Amino acid sequence: MKRTLFVASNRLGDAVLTTGVLHYLLETEPEAAVTVVCGDIPKSIFEGISGVERVIGVRKRRFSLHWPEVAISLGPVFWHRIVDFRGSLLGFLPGRHRHVWRGGKDDIHKVVANARLIGVDTPLPPRITPTAAQIDAAGKWLGPAIDRPPILALAPTANFYQKQWHFENYIRLAQKLTEAGGIMAGARVAVFGAPGEEAQAMPVVKALARNQVIDLVGKTSPMEAATVLSQCTLFVGNDSGLMHSAVAVGIPTVALFGIGKPAVYGPWGDRSLCLKSTPPGTAIIRPENGRGDGEDEPLPFSQVLRETESFYKRISAPESGS
Image 1 (tube, rainbow, N blue to C red):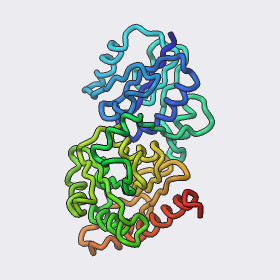
Image 2 (image 1 turned 90 degrees about the vertical axis):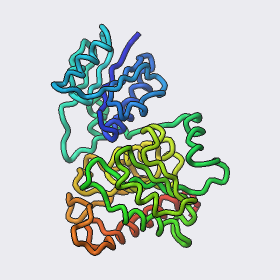
Image 3 (image 1 turned 120 degrees about the vertical axis):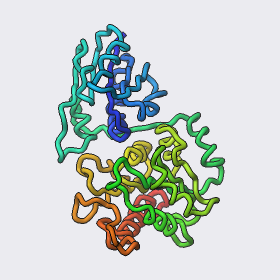
Image 4 (image 1 turned 45 degrees about the vertical axis):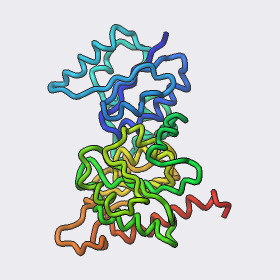
């Protein structure tokens, strides 16, 4: 049997961005069983994908000792194909076809660069497809699918504080979008955040009406979060792995960028909007001694509200037949 070794990132966002390549390989080489090696955090994203035989979660150790341990656990295999997005020692295991990441460029999106790594000239966008069983299980948070109102997904956290738009801005945004006359009037609001991100996410949860908010802070695995996102109507969030998950499940996505690299890590596709700080590359945190209304920030509240409303109306128009 042919076997493919697929080495993905330790970070959720980078791992999600490789899912398009993985699905391409599964579709073009269905006879090859795939072993995925990735960090423990994104592991659930790869588990359950048809054609993936095994998923190994990696916890980093000093002196990169985790790689020899993984190599031993893989056993003596001559791989049909090795795709290594980590540039790790695993890229040099015995194999017929070898694709090892050597670093990207700041003007090429990862979706494009990832595809080129395996010799594909067209972009391979991220793709996460929850199963029917996973969608049914998400009902414990979302309630019955019948007559379910629209859901606004908010991700007010990120892996670095300078990427975080102030939580008060998210509260106001949710209120404006879902109030009577808003573009998502009557919508519920799902608030996401990983364990340890409560300080930024919970104020949003607590500020919204109890019967409106869906508190998912620290309660989901990455795959469970992606499944919930697949049932949402619109996503607004910081530059984060969850933002890429929203893109991967196909919902309209608004990403707020400051110090990151939007040319490389911006949300991909026509159903996304990337809002950047002014000047570009400025942290989107609230300035000390600021006014507190969000208008003197590198990414002003009024701009985010206005452009989110315009984007949502444009995306929704074809579906409404207008």
